[in-house]
Image (cartoon, rainbow, N blue to C red; front, side, top):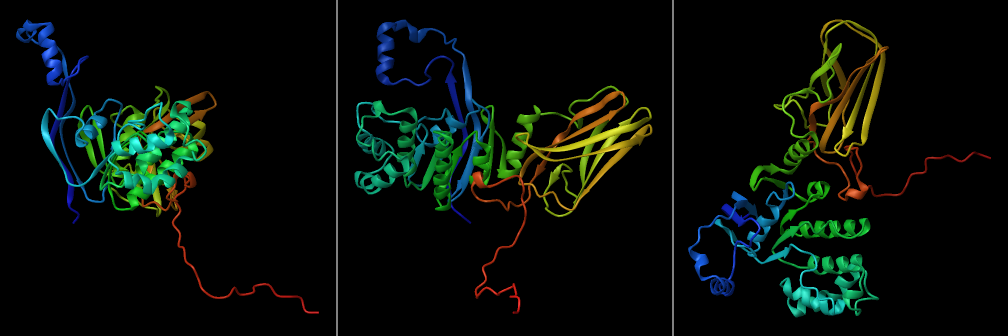
Length: 414
């Protein structure tokens, strides 16, 4: 079993709203000189907890993702682990050399050249001069700034600035790497390049804690995910399951109960759904690429004829994955089961939603997403890079066979 390299216990961080919660001795003396009696006044300031009672363990070589809404406490946690901020309560131990990518471009000076800022920023991030010299050409090539490396950075475009900043930070070689939303920089091409670099870091066996709102990046890089909500860890576990729960909460507004998300008080409406086969303790999870049977329940109040029924499967970003329809259906009053049998549903892991519709000659009867969403937790057979992976998750076998190609065409005899 891998050793624990990050151990946090009951971490909490309290801030005074609108004021700095921590001041140095110099500022304390200045405040006392300006207002000697202020120390005896009551404190009516409002406090809030940016982080509260967070306990966490990260093992050596693990890649942990931190997700959550803006202001949930993710950056505060990384700053505590980086020793930038002291916790109000609790404690944390870190074993190993730590590199932090919390703010891309920290330490850049506009009057210095790209070359000079590379050495300055590298030193701030913990690299020695010899280490920077050894990696300098690689850093410049990664940033694609060979022609401008001796130009003052104040003349750089925002894209050039970001490319150099990330290139310096990305070439750290710490045992533990703490990363805060630095992969959402530059243009799309450079973001893909940054993501590839982070993949290399992860595959090298280093411990990584990554904060990102780009869930596809988290899904690709991380084995485990912690969902931070309101300063506390709401869920911590397998990446696919935690991301699925988070996406469901974000896209569905954390619905409660089951049924249609857009019901109509008419002749009929959809009241629920489940994965019948294969059986799972959670009937809305799909964990196999084998045969699948899904059942939708339709409650009918009065007889309806000449019914059109449609069904669409959507991905989390609302791409149509599959759709089908049937016409001239008839339903009598009562509850009906609409059963779909699939040889397989070869979609990549993630959150999906079923949209169902029902129409007759008089118009729409019911249409909307049935909730909750479907969480697919199957093994992934995708390309490791997001830009080359698609919606389908098709299992296959790959082999290389030695030997000469056999001629399969015959020549016409003369």
